[in-house]
Length: 115
Image 1 (cartoon, rainbow, N blue to C red):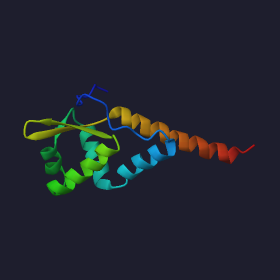
Image 2: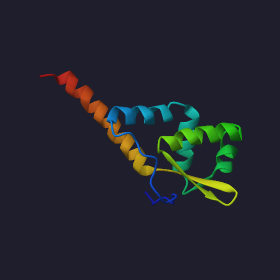
Image 3: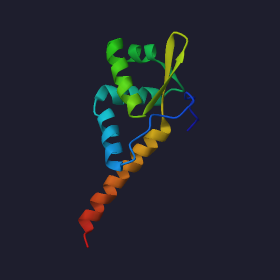
Image 4: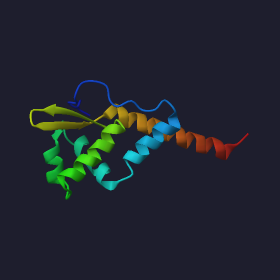
């Protein structure tokens, strides 16, 4: 995988409690449009919001709200570039989401095995 150009600076912090962090990430991914936006961003080095609007059959305001939810969960970063905002998917946040899901799976497997 090639490195992605992402705005500098820290991503939105996740809650330290794993259950709260997983719930925040799951909420952000709970809408198909947000999943599509994330897939769109993952397929590109960087992207302006207008390109996302052109790609999806959604109004600019709807895309902006979905991007805000993804940003709040730390899955997407954005940087103002003149009159535009350049967005990218945060790969570290996606890795953290995977770790949290694997932790949930491990808990389920542990519960099946029992003492």
